[in-house]
Amino acid sequence: MTRPGWFRRLWALSTGRFGIIVVAAVGLTAVVAMFWTPFDPQHVDVDERWLPPSWPHVLGTDGSGRDILSLLMAGAKTTVWVALGAGLVATALGLVLAALGALTTRWVRESVAVLVDILIAFPVLLIAMMISSVWGGSLWVVIVSVGIGFGVNIARVTRPELRRVLHSDFVLAGRAAGLTPFQNLWRHLLPGVAPVFIVQLSWGMAVAVLAEAGLSYLGFGAPVTEPSWGLLLKDLQAYISVHPLTVVWPGLAITVTVLGLNLLGDGLREATDPTLSRRTAAARIHQPEVIA
Amino acid sequence: MSLVVRDLVVSIDGRRVVDGVSFDVPDGARVGLIGESGSGKSLTALAVLGLLPAGATASGSIRWNDVELIGLPDRALARLRGDEIGIVFQEPRTALNPIRTVGRQIAESVRIHEGLSRKDAAARAIAEAERVRLPDPAALVRRYPHQLSGGQRQRVAIAMALACRPRLLIADEPTTALDVTIQADVLELLRSLVTEDGMSLVFITHDLAVLSQIATHAVVLEDGRVVESGPLTRLLTAPASPVTRGLLRDATATLWRPGGAG
Image (cartoon, rainbow over the protein chains, first blue to last red):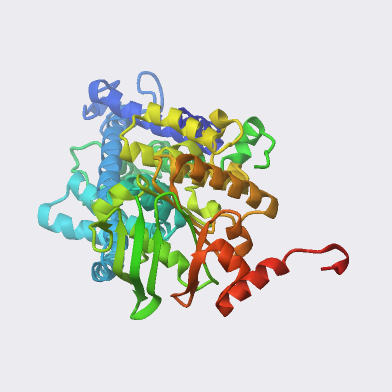
């Protein structure tokens, strides 16, 4: 009953629609790339280097004659993997920290708040450098470091929101209806903080895409054998004065994906909040108020 | 099915805000707790349900059907809440979750206590909405609290509290946030539901005029202590304490007389 409701509302928003299309397209590309790409993305053909966009290399080739479209498609796999992984780590860490910081006894609450304040002082890049100096550069470094960085961010924003909802009358009413603390968490508290959480999470996933590109660029992320938008951008950027067009493709892919994730998060927040939905749905559901 | 409260003390940070309150609610009785704000009447009600705010502790004795509620683990209390004892809060705007449909909230306690499926619960919500005389219940249960009027919201809150057919209903100033005309409707609804079902009622208010329409007995509180209690007719005709006399004066003073004549 509610499921098609929020999806319809999300689709009705231009930002939401853009977000859905972009995220679906990137996801689909990643799935397709697992089975098929126009060329082998790592196939080197020196005779075909620096080809402009043409048939059969639709987006041209790079300095080793690799097909840029195939590299982008293969890189989408990495992007999706990193965004989902970092999102998962950030969600788990963020919600656990927020719940510990909001719902437990006073001493635990205060300690968690201090811990979060300390952790938030560490930039993602620093965490990534620390992890990769021990275990070496890999996608896991990106996932874990962005996950920790944004998990802490989510905790910091969600914790006071959780406190606010916890003290609202409807949570008390829920307890009065016989909800156990866990049922209350599930039915009232988490849905109550969902708007804040979703925006943070979509932002975190967008940053994960950027961070993967950035960290791979700096050499902390994907190894050079792994196709990645960040690595591709780094490779091509060296030749930007000679072959400027080639740099555009990975740059565009990163920009559009980040924008799509951000707008999807924004749209989701608006679509799932029934008190905001009046603007779009008022005309259809408006009924004259009956005085009780 | 009776509630017996003996020497109930609620302290917040060592301050006794409810100080030795005792009263009985026999089966089917309608008892009012009346007093000015800060007299401890709401905390008394919350103590019965074990829902005191953090930092507040209760001692003394609250016996529900010979089961001592003070000191009962929260899990056991949760089984009682909503199922045997229901509560209606003062402010229906905040007591309903703004992001859940009215129907889901009405059926919440039924889903927990009777283990109904989602579909059965939805049907039950419509039946419960009809019981509290909400207009067009089938459509109304799909709406959100902000789409309802204040009186409708309070009816939803009453339906929530009564969905499991509790044996005791606690109503914490349920009409204070409503317009005067709607107050009368909601009071009438509460009274008919309570008497039809034969459940007990604890009605909390600061307004003796409201209480006289619904309760048979009253307990007058001041600064956390009982100053007077007894049948409402006696309190109305022969108030013994100055507090009761003050409440009576306030209740009659609000009646507007045309032309200023007595």
